[in-house]
Length: 188
Image 1: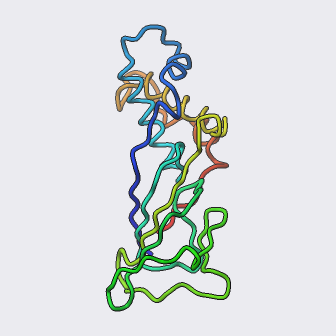
Image 2: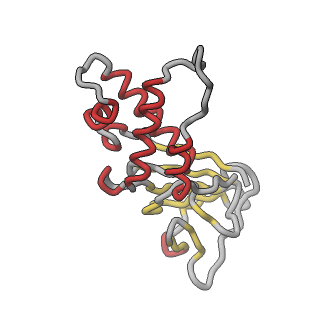
Image 3: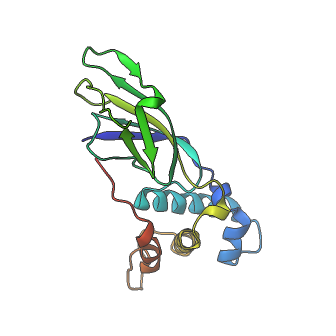
């Protein structure tokens, strides 16, 4: 199964306010605010992609080539499905009635006693619009926020791709260890 995923842009300030990032970095002045905000946003983006999660609530559009047997939405925590559109076997776009599906714990199921409709084979034959993400920064698990802060600090301290005169290391193990419990396998 192949799929594409589009989303609204995230708001890094809603996930980790600049003042909190600066406090973690022990930066007292505003000289590097733009850089710190950009590095924070890069860290958030990396964490979201690594874990297949959304740290802020926003809309996503998933387009796939059919209904998988086990339909797990590709980003967590998925909180709502607002629309499912299919292309039937004649090529006509059909908006599914919400009574025709069930949404539970990030998964889509056909309604009890029914099955998914036959769809046109090919990319984009099923489109699902859904909301995923934490409602506020207070809802984000502390381990995830700690990983964002650690990665922001790593990027702030190591501003170049290589380091002369030092042992080269990868992204801190602490980041991946903190995120291990939240990582969702990517489908597709």
